[in-house]
Amino acid sequence: MTRPAPTPMKVMLVEDNDALREGLARQLQRAGKITIVATAHDGYEALELLRTIPTDLVLMDVEMPHLDGVEATRIITEEHANIRVAMYTAFERSERLSAAMAAGAVGFLTKDMPIKDVIDALERIRVGEHVLSPQATNAAISTLKLMGDYHRSSTHWNELVDELSAGQRAVYDELITGATNKEIAKKIAYSEGTVRVYVTQILDHFGCQSRTEVALRAARAGIVNKTQ
View 1 (tube, rainbow, N blue to C red):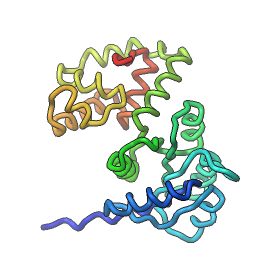
View 2: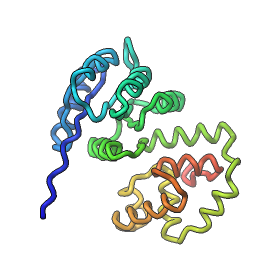
View 3: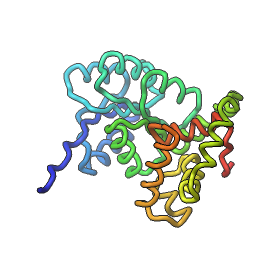
């Protein structure tokens, strides 16, 4: 029996740059997996639109006039528990990342990401994942290292790392850099299917809900990114 196609995700796009907002809306809509239900130029307009327009996910710029993305995210997550918010920014300052996540954002994407990666990230967020772009992941890792608290659980984490098989370890070493499955497969000459299997095993092994959590907990434990 053929399964029905999934319902397109209802996305609201909030961006103060008119040209970027409309261009991104067209690209996302063209993919066929997303319906742009509304666009807004700042947080206030987004809040007003959300009162009447059913929305699954808000893709939100961080820096905007009047009401910025972080504060708008805080209000949205308080008033609309069923709506997920992902930040969309040209940069990944760690303090803005931390503020956005504290406000309730479940994704932090950068504007240099290819559109196919943005769409993939939104689909992952839709099903419950927390997603950071590779740049944002590295920014978060750097912050944790600077905080100096990464030694706290290093012994236990190192023991878990040592228990990984050779294949799992190869994938793990790339995963904690923020690499995508496709990038990992290319780097270590595995198929993407094999990488996906190993990623699932790694998440189970460490008791993590997402690859981002693995990367952040590795940094907290003092596992230095081998590419840095």
